Image (cartoon, rainbow, N blue to C red; front, side, top):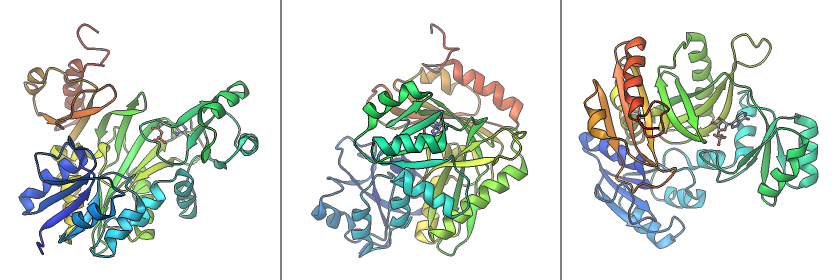
Length: 379
Ligand code: AMP
């Protein structure tokens, strides 16, 4: 039995960054991922097998100190099977909640965490009933396996209903009222085995084509009141699940002057380290990856404060000229060792600065080199 080996279900970039954060702590890693070309392949031991392969899961779990996951669509049954033999953090119940948008929205509602209005849709009649109840515009989403904007369609008016049903009907769905948000934020929090909690400053997120493009941390114009509100919601989720590890909740922020409506609405949660927390590697006292590992192995949590201001830009689909990027001040590159493909996250860039004005200047320089940036030369 090796008491320093952490098992990670999923061998993507999140797993890769977890391992990179864990080596200085003297930890070792073993991954389970069906892809032979996973980003962790040169970094650690990897069992290449399906998450449903019971024999492979048993082999993967053999002698581990603790198991975790970097991918929220890991079958709950696999996490529960592992849990018979070794601790699994975050608790598999968190996976169960996060894998089904309806269960997740009901869970938030139970905890008095505001969300968009929602209703289950199982057939055409219940879609009509849900529209009656919620009104339009609304978004029809699959309950399971939706990510990065996939598996959802906007219904702006009645003429769109048939197309939306044609696109998604025949599987369990949820209809959500369209939230006219001012911006999207996320809160990342970590809870240790002893129940201690640390929260990172809220992050402002900008999506393009349903994929996270850019995060800024701390979120510009962040007030102490909004930070506290988000932390309160995060703590409710952490306590309710007796959670251990990093949790991310994606939030919609309404305009401050929209009297009567909730200021923050929860959209979804991720029971794992999160793309909107990559800035913490250089921008926070302790990164989300290190804090997740500290939590699951029972070490004290590290300080989650920001060191200054940071922005993270995802490299999606193709890579920019990295030589130009790395010549910029306090600019850091992370490549995931993945083959380029449209819509694929290949890496990210984090730029740091001592204050928001300097950060905005540096971010503008970074964005000039982004392939999809409106400022890119030749675009
Ligand atoms: P999701 O897959 O739920 O994270 O949704 C992807 C993106 O769609 C979000 O980041 C939002 O930009 C947008 N979106 C999702 N749900 C809603 C909603 N109820 N109202 C407005 N925009 C939404």
